[in-house]
Image (tube, rainbow, N blue to C red; front, side, top):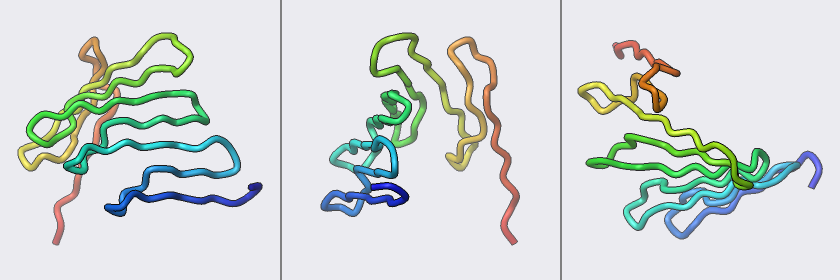
Amino acid sequence: MVGRQWYADDGYGRRVIACGSGPCTYQLYSQAGALLHTRDASKSIDTDYLYLAGSVVATRARPAAGGTETVTYQHTDALGSPVATTNAAGQVVERTQYAPYG
């Protein structure tokens, strides 16, 4: 389908497939609703999500055809909002800042 996108949701309303003009993206959820795995067919990358106490603490991205996997760790503030992502060497690769509401 050129120029069209379509989506499929599971019985809980969670998007499990997203397709555009190229390959699709697939998502797998736990019974509790946590995102466990994503397959991005356009980039040929599989990503696994690791949780602790209900929050994502790490992701592992690996090429579907083999190659080097990338592990990143998510750091949160006291409210549980993600504020930084570090790589396996402990270097900050992404920061997020939030402005107060009101």
